Image (cartoon, rainbow, N blue to C red; front, side):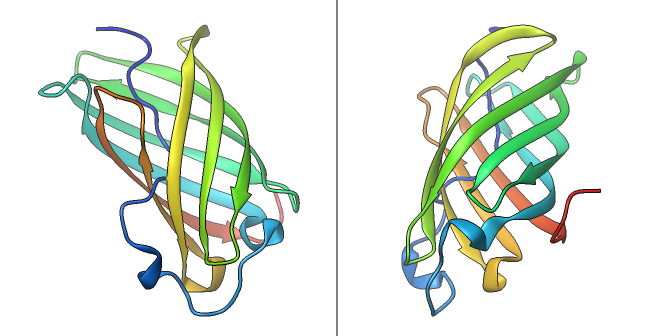
Length: 144
């Protein structure tokens, strides 16, 4: 299985902007400490699950640490860092640089929708060869 598999996630556009909160979003909308889960297949037919936490700054720079379960065969640590761009309609994009098992892995491109007045995010990685969906929920407004 290739290391460029997934990723995650943390955010992608699984829903249309119409389901985003009414009102306006900004870079600060997603600041805080988050928990995430992702699940799907990569490559198609090979199950993948992700679990971890992220910190997002008031400028929407994300730093994440988690684990990737690849086909139930092994679990690898995953580290992601990326600058998000939150649009006023509460949609956005992020590109993460990542390591998987301590080794560099391809960038992860994600589209997302911000929900619940900034308390939740639904994301969909847009890299080819993946069927993956991610959910994030804010734990606190500040990092631990």
